[in-house]
Length: 324
Image 1 (cartoon, rainbow, N blue to C red):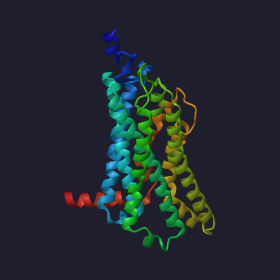
Image 2: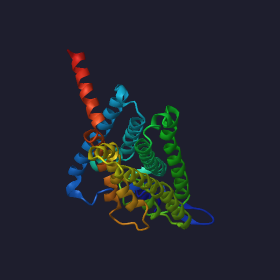
Image 3: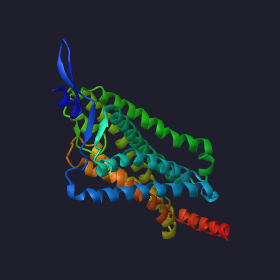
Image 4: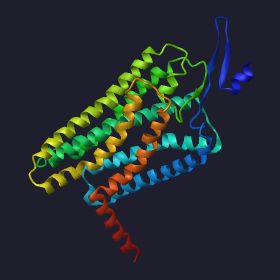
């Protein structure tokens, strides 16, 4: 009995008061049911990870070496690029290991650590996107005082606060989830340790944990989304008052990239985390905001951004001069 449970990732405890099994590791099912797509998924995720990390590193380097990009907007974009690199690194290497080698087990400590970091980064991204919306709103609605308001100290504070808020909220959510009793089964129907699938495996009452997760979703995803919507309503009202068509296009072009990224990210996270219904499709939706959205973000910020494209051309000229 004890040996078979051990192979299943469970430990059998017998005391004077109770006999029970306790989970010592979790098994990530991931996409094991899609046998015929394992190779395709492995190649797609590997290429997505490489492109995402490389693309964001290029953005960070461009912003670092080009003096014309030393502005608050690009400070936030570089902070967002760093966040994206860490965000995909938390989940995708483990998923690749699962798909390629079949290593689908994760210790309890490793599972909750991954959940804490992933959720912390996700909430950080929500509020960093809100900060970027505030920056665009201030630039469009108060351009004369923008430089005097968005000084280096304020920019640094606005870039750091989302990290503090994100990992504080994630700590509380992780704490309430970790206090649940997990006595089996230990198979998580997901490709990473996420709070919803973990809760379904708990043997104890979920009320407090469910309330904590719901409040976390409200104060992170929903609240930041409402803040972004409010800023963009203000931006749209201001742009609508501009008489020239070229003026309207120029004003909106400064925030189109951010609006696209925010729409992609919140479109899926609200469905997965801010709705009370858990579905079997959550892990497929999670692929969008853990793989597809980070993959597209570098292209959105380069292909749709004139300043970044100009910086790329200037860097090419500089490199050519150095080589010749």
